[in-house]
Each structure stands twice: as structure tokens, then as C-alpha cells.
Length: 129
Image (cartoon, rainbow, N blue to C red; front, side, top):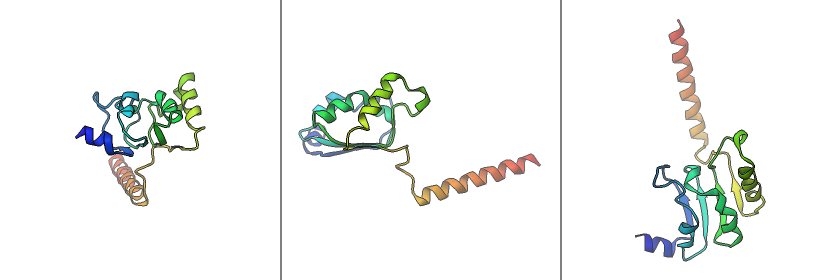
């Protein structure tokens, strides 16, 4: 149950879809429910975590370490000044790791993606003739 979850968890690794219920699921209220300070990893969808509150939670020690493979806005060219300031501050923490949405990549997945792409290109070429 959730009571047991919040009393015992030290590491939260998110692997859930983005829905109306999960949008900004991880906010200050969520994090404050943990008995222990936590490590937070998000490899699911960026908008599940309310990014703007992360710096304060890191400074307060509520989040001991942060790994984000997904960001709320992954189109860097559209960042507002506010979004730029959030990520600039986050990358200044030694206990924060940001990666470019590649957590699921492996040699096997890269090979599979290449095979699927080659098959689609072949099918496209066949349709041209």
C-alpha cells in the first residue's frame, strides 16, 4: 500500500505512462510524503515530474540524487528563459545526471531499430517500382 511505500522507499524509478493522473505526479507534496530522503530517476515521461521544484528539493536534501533521461520539454530550441534557468541550475548539482532520452538503448535495441528502419526503406523502395 502507499503508506508502506512512503515509509520504506529510498529510490524512486519512474516507469509509467504520462496520463492526466500522472502529469506532475512527482511534486513537492509527493516527495514530502517519504519518510526517507530519496534518489529519483525518471526514464518514463518528462511531465510526470514537476521540474521547477527539483532544485529546491535537492537543496533541502529531500532528493539525494537525481537522474533524468526525459525532460518536460525536450525541444531545446523552444525553451523559455525560465526553462533555461531551471536546467542550468540543475546541471550545476554534482548529484544530478541528465541524459538525452537514451535509457532504453542497448546494442540489441540499436540493432533492432536499424533492422526495422532497413525493412521500412526496402518496402518504400519496392513501392516505387
